[in-house]
Length: 277
Image 1 (cartoon, rainbow, N blue to C red):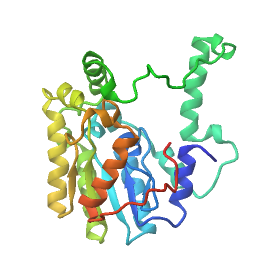
Image 2: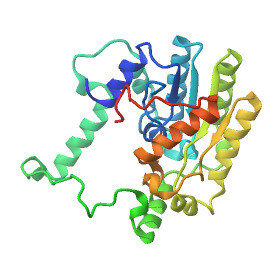
Image 3: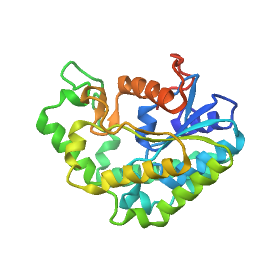
């Protein structure tokens, strides 16, 4: 399979790097897949899914080192209530179902496709639009105008706001308890907040729950005595693809920074063992 989900499944059950990253789309886009590090993050992964992958990988790799992305967005309404049990089971399964469209990871896209076609049947006969970049296409988030950057950041951040009282949710308790159990068992963990653009930071500056979520992760790391790398405000806008996801250049920088700050690794293999989705 060439789909990124199945690529990750293959790498997951194959002996590979001793360092692995787990998280959602920010980790998926922001940490390279190289000879030094595997990346099992997928867009939309909830915190429960992230922890499930992490626990399963450490059970197979007890001497492994794990980077765990825990962004404020994981405490938003959509993420807290996401039920991804079947998706996680599919990812961890050693079996390859014969009908891929019925698997949880693909069924959601199939349903979305069917709904889109119902709304606009002409999609089936229209010539696809040209999607290749041109000289006029912005290459990074910084290439957008200030108004465009602000608007995009405000729209995206509205869907990411942590729910009121997220610190006292069962999700926050499970995060603390499950990470502590792994640490007590000898796992080498590094908790991470991935960077966001200056426009995104400005958009959420008046919402204290974003800073509160970072404080929660920092406190958990302190309690366990493990590193916490907070890259939230560290990078300029020209290394971002959009308001809160790094472009490839930014991913190179973030990967190097995290390997150094988390595990003291000062070099990184440049060749990639698995392409970025």
